[in-house]
Length: 396
Image (cartoon, rainbow, N blue to C red; front, side, top):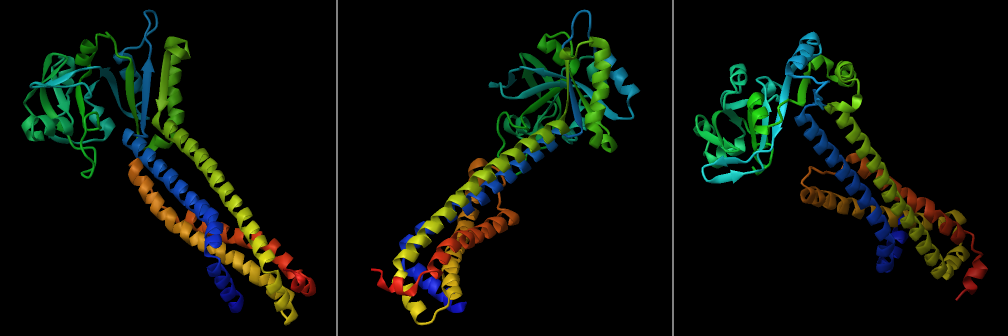
């Protein structure tokens, strides 16, 4: 066995270019599996974190109010009280297309939203300075605002310095009463339009700014003990709205947990497709290994005849060529793993995700590469072992 291994290495080294080209298919296939699995896992982690930050315990409601059939804020709060067993908070939300102005600088990228006093608890975020919107602000339609970390540090220098200052929203002055703590990590750069570029005002003031006249969006927060049943609890809201609208086209109820499950299913399907493509490349590489080994058997016919004439057994010839194919595939597998690690890291940096090779993908791809060498190397090896020594010695 050791002698066959040495002969295999000698044969590979003596035909370096041909051996490398044989390995190339294995290298590409193994690297592709590792890189694709790493990227898919990185994307899944990124999306899971993104949806988690959005809150898998949240249910969003959008309604289209008609003159004859409509729900208002009081109706939704009544529903909340009747179903307080399942929901901890509810907040009307009014998205405002606004131009935010600080001094002489304008921003159209700031996410301006009208909310209630419970919205901070729904977001599960904390204040860095000042206070959040209060019930009294909503009743009196006070022109107060709570801003994100980006606005506070970019335009006012710090969170503490921002509290008490004025900020203009669509030409109307609002007093800054609080600053929300930073949502992005310290390693991430703050940017306009990011999760820290936010501004919250009382929803009653937002309705006036939006000139819509009514609230069409609501955000519910499911209690922790019922998060796993969010899909079922969602139907309670749908049933309630149906009794009012009598038409399910007039409202949309979305559980964030459902979106996360849908995304996971989609990414899982994509992962299987990409894995299949990578598997096909390994299969093609196997055909290449078999072709090269057949060429090698043809070239070494006289060598095989001499060895058989000197008493080499059939299984010795068979094992030599099988081992040679397995060694070639294994070396390609090792190089493919190295390329896969480098490629996954590079792809992760380019795509801005935390992509890293998984132990399972490395193990499976390497084992498959070895199996390809053994399986596709067996036919040429059997052909070599079956050669008649007299015919082999007569060949040119």
